[in-house]
Length: 67
Image (tube, rainbow, N blue to C red; front, side, top):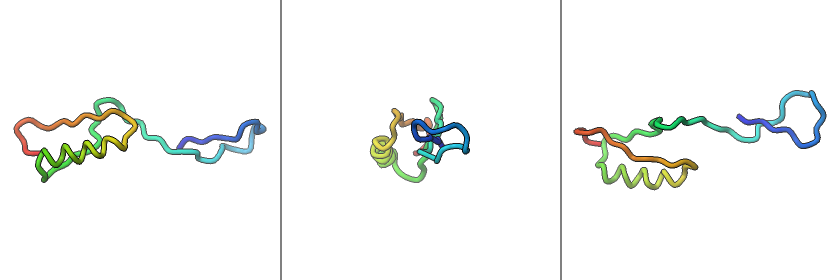
C-alpha cells in the first residue's frame, strides 16, 4: 500500500492512511495463463482484458502446444 499524509501536517504521529495499492510487474513477467480453450477464444479474452490494464500487454503461446 502507498500511504499519504495531508499537506502541511506536523511531523510525527505515525504514517498516513493507505491511499492506494500498487503491484510491481517487471517486463517479461507472465501475468495470466489460459488452458482448455481454442487460441482464437483465448486471444479475444486477452484482448478484452488488456484494455483494463494500465500497461502494454502481449499475447504469447507455446510452440507445438494447444493453447
